[in-house]
Structures are given as C-alpha cells and as structure tokens.
Image (tube, rainbow, N blue to C red; front, top):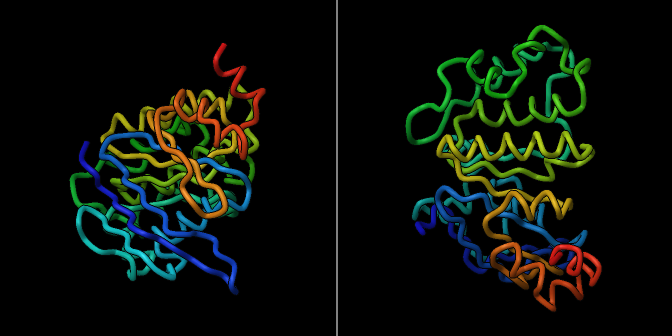
Length: 246
C-alpha cells in the first residue's frame, strides 16, 4: 500500500501535559482508516496537528513526501488534506445551497481533478438537493451532518479527516452516513475517521489505530483490534470483545 500521509514521532504537550507522545502513523491511499481510543487519548489533538490547527512539540507530518508540519491550515487544505470538526460547522443564516456555494468558492484545492462538476452535483451526491432552499438551521440533524461533509468535500480533498461524524445519529442515520463515507472512498478520496461508535467504525474501516494516553497501542484490521488484550483492557472491555466475536 502507498502511504500518502506519514506521521513520524509526533508529540504535543500542553502546559506540561503530554497529549501526544511519539506517535507514528501511515495513512494508505484509498483506504478508510479508523482512529479510536478513550476520551483524552489524543485523537483530536492528532488531527489538529496534521491539519495545522495546532503546532506539534516534536515530530513531522509528511503529505506525499512533502513536510507540512509547519504549514497553516489553509495551506494544508489547499494541498488536499481537509478535515471536519465535531461541532456543526455551517453558516446558520444561509440556505443549504448557499452554504455549499460559499465553501465551493472559497476553498477549491487538491492536486488532481475535481470530484464534482458543480454545487448542484455535490448536493445530489449528499442527498440534499430537495433541501437546497432550506436554511441550514431548519434541516434534520442527519442532513446537517451531511451538509458539514459537503463543506469539506467542496474543498476538493484527497484526504478527508472526519472527527466523530456519527455523534448524535441514530442507528439508521449512522448506516446512511457509513454508506455515504463508502461512496466518498469510491470517488478516490482517502478517509481517516475518529469515532466512539465502535460498531459503526468496526463495520466501516479496513484498518484501525488505537491511541491511549497519547501513544499508539494497537493497529490492525477490526477483528485484530477487537481481540487485542491491551485494547480490551484500556478501552473496549470484555463485553464488547465477546459481542463482536459472535
């Protein structure tokens, strides 16, 4: 597998607290990679360091061999590394279509051809065409999540980092989101996703990395991670491991 993103020895401290402690990661082109771990394990901090919102204390981030460790978020996004946030990042007083239009005009990046021909093409892909004239604050929660994805996709990403995209969704909405993320991968976009919903991420991802107190403690296919004694001890618990095996 070709690594498009390589993280080497990444560390970050906040007021003496070690949030990341020498993390190494390779993100392979065309995969859906999962990132899990207990609260406070450093997952979002890792995303923040990769995308330039936080400067690491040590280590390097390489995008297709280029050192992007010290670049600003907008520079990194224009190279094709784009992220979402846990909060809904939309323009509340604008319509669904106006939200996508603003993102489309402001953040066209990436290093290869466009995935979508127009805003309307993107809205069709997201299943939001019928809501395009509604205010962003007036659409269902699951549709708002899709709109947040749309703002990121408007930037023409080659690597899309999703921070807890399934948070607050019910089971049916979560399955629809998983289907949408799989469709995003089919466009040729590599996806890296943080999630606490373990059944969601176990069924979606081909490979999963586990963080604990700022360190990578496991990596492998979902079944391998679910049966890792260390992961069971500090994160999943015996019940989840038994349930996932049945």
